[in-house]
Length: 459
Image (tube, rainbow, N blue to C red):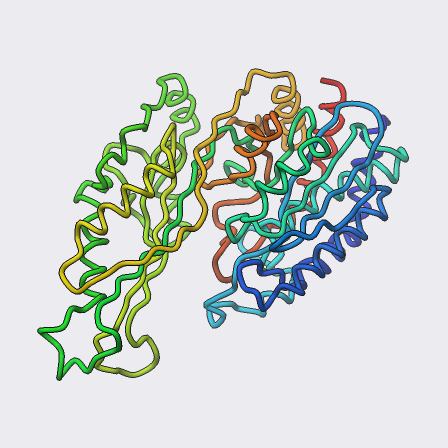
């Protein structure tokens, strides 16, 4: 048996202990966006520091104006890689839709096999622990890692990463490596591993429409008084046409057509849009007409409404005209779309729709451009081969509908590309109630990273 075979065997034998470690991390309520959970975020960061130290890393918690970063170095010879993950999680609301407490992880049997059910199971605690388990096995079997590994764990990814850019800029020399490894992506399907090479960018904006200086009785003021909910609803309704296209002026100016060769590759994947929607109880693609579901997710921009707040929303009924109403609006960006330019365009459009006596306030939330990565490098070829061997199915180069701003920051600030490999699935319900991570994904994810580390060392 080779060293790699011994490492893989160790991962197999250590499965129960690996699961216990993941469960310990999942129990920590590290919700970064809510200040009430700041201590839980610190607890998770400290736990990771101690776990990394047990693997021989020089690990420290680095406090920021927000949630802590975790930085660790293995030292050693060979290719220098930087692994990135995030330990913070999304809020759990609405809590009543969870089938079990979100921070009490458990194994559940489903039609597709055993899953780990908990907030953060797939995004991103389960994913980052696959890499740590691969490192643990290499250290246990050989006493060292096949590469020089630096680790960066972030605690604010789910709240817009406000501390990230200053931290990268201040610690650029320490964090620079030959290649970044990012485990916050997914598989093409349950049996097909993928390396993500295209990411959509992201822009978020909260819009608050204000009218009267207090809530009003609808019997006394309904009619003559401006209603912020009605005004907001009209503004939002005007942002799409009947063909699913965004009507915001200039929205598509910097969107490039998908190259014919890439479209042919994607068509060959035979992605079933109806089956994809069927997993979440839908049937008919509702996005831009003329584009497949896969093209809509991987290569087309969107403008979506993620939350609307206004008036009385409790049980029962209250006939009130609210003083204000708010909407959370997000855009997924592609090609060369500029979040700064589009934020200005959105605000200009909103203000052009305001009637007399009505004002607007904004609260920005993040902004990053799309990213496209090269695939014709020895590192990408080696990783593709390693994944193919582990899953016995050819690994594909895929797009990704989500946004991982860190990948663009790594390129701009640290001057390196990223290898994005993850083992999540479309039905993992990340950001939603009942988030899960398939037990098979967790185990084979660790085996996959063990193979990739070995392949990169030889590339």
